[in-house]
Length: 193
Image 1 (cartoon, rainbow, N blue to C red):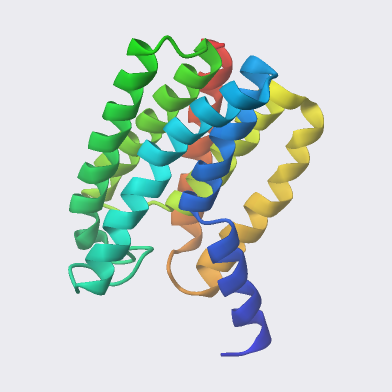
Image 2: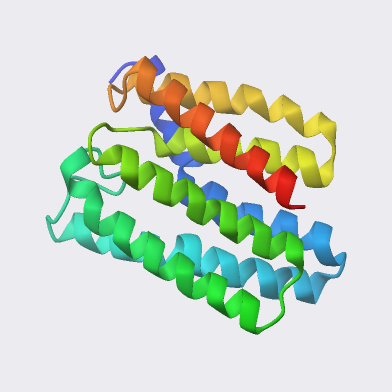
């Protein structure tokens, strides 16, 4: 593996959907509450049901040979991980509603589920990049809740797109489609809030 491949691998891991989805709810919960304990509580609830628990299932599946790795590169292997993500995401959304979470946090969970459902539907016939979808969507969400300077996060989004193509995990079309889908879902967040 050459130096560019190593850089691509680091970008792929640091900006992986599970990492972004674990951190984004904390940033949104902070914008919604402005207080440490509610931020941690709401943020961790969303992170647990949308990232931490699903990733535990995905890693278990990868280690037991059910799919090809924790990024589930083969399109055919994505069905069960998507179902787990959607099921746990719905559980998290239900808890947010029952526990009367701030609307910003609920709206974030809604759009994350929309991105999952759309990506799952596309994946039936074509492999769309979850990396670029999540990073692009997170960029829009952060710009909406924390200000326009967050549009600079387009640069890491472009870097992760490059990394996915460089590692041959996606085609250029798949990373562009993921970024467009994530941006559209981020736009939905802007409309909801």
